[in-house]
Image (cartoon, rainbow, N blue to C red; front, top):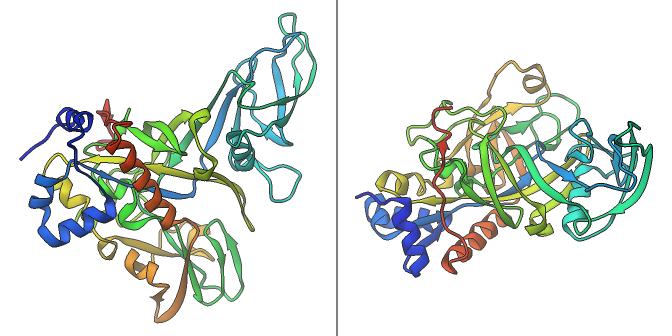
Length: 374
């Protein structure tokens, strides 16, 4: 049996498509098997929500009078990059202001929430662009364009961080207690978008997705993308592996799914909500989308030594079922687990995307090039 994306889209448009969330598909495959599930289901929706540091905002403010060519600029006191063109600038999610606890991710949340922000800039002062200094207030209603432009999002899998030293350490995966007392992780397990298509058969450049509460697109592989990692027998990567770059219009997004955060000892970031629909083309895709938390393994890494030294050492692997149980065993010691991402929000995003498809507000796209061979 094989279905095409075009065939599935016709079913979406006439209201006959069967859409399940990743959690629902996992249960169906466990009860009836992949072959039966493939014959019944057309689309599986996924979702993840957590810090995605390689994110940012590309803004064109529109021209002022007199004209100015930005040399330096700040948004609510957060430095933006201006080396693009006259009134284009890029704001990174991890850029920090002088105000403790506030950074680029918070500016993005403020904008998508409809708030006005303080904009200050200096200019190059040329014949074409004579203005030297600018102080103004801008919002999504006043700028020409505002595009969420993220370079590395939605890691296929990720490290579980522990601390084998005798002192507390602060990392981007949270505060880690000494002597392997706790373990921080990030991910949504069986709901994770790229886990549900581990070989990137359907995901690639041009794939339409749920991004920040609106519609976005995958623009290609994310930085640090790896399509040939170590895998479990079920095909699921046992390490970070694949990533995606994404883009979408901030004006269509929702602050519930884009939140500025501050990680103690690390700095500013942005929690991003991403959901990807997985077309069930055949039995293999049904099998991939039916993998449960117990069969998804993440590497355990010591962030007091092995991670900063980048020596590649792994202390072992644990399943997401174990991680969500609240406790894992590392080198014979019990470590309490905590997540910096939200599984509940990942499930909510999968449910939202399912609703969009069922209400015929969202159809699937065919990737111009999948990420499989990259």
